[in-house]
Image (tube, rainbow, N blue to C red; front, top):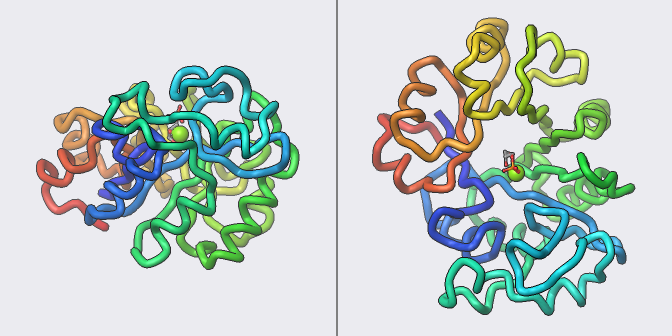
Length: 241
Ligand code: G3P
Ligand code: MG
């Protein structure tokens, strides 16, 4: 079962920062999951929420800020003073960290609240330019964007869902993928085993208890997103990278 560090090593470092990604780059895991938004001047930045309020010392929406305004914010102190120098990274800065490793990047397009027109193409272009096209997996709760990525047939893409579907595999195939990222509660519903039986590649978020990870491994789930990848590495039998 593959292990992805969710927002980097976000259980031990401030989420979606270079510190969290550098820690993940040191581990023999499959990769990292990152969340991306677009600034008002069209730069791709890595942060979970639409607003900077929760994870920085600033206020407001990413969509209303320039990259230079975003870069002034402290993205580490909210977690611990030790990380006060951390900033909101750009996608390019995250690529820099993994340039010479073999980790994969799950780039989650946060286009389900604001559409961030042009984000899909910008992410794909940047990944291509940086040589990451065969190492990225695009996902989103915005399935129209997942479908757009699927139609381009250049990179892997997955639907993200919180919902319970009678037949999630058939739905994913309509979108254009066989990859499904399920929430932990949904992964214990029949839809997970049905999808696996039909041939889906199923990853589950966010799995922070080892016993849940072990149960998911037993039913054949292909990957997990966890805030504590070191714990999973130590506790799971033969995690696959
Ligand atoms: O991509 C898996 C997971 O990150 C989706 O939920 O809210 O943590 O971005 P969220
Ligand atoms: Mg995410």
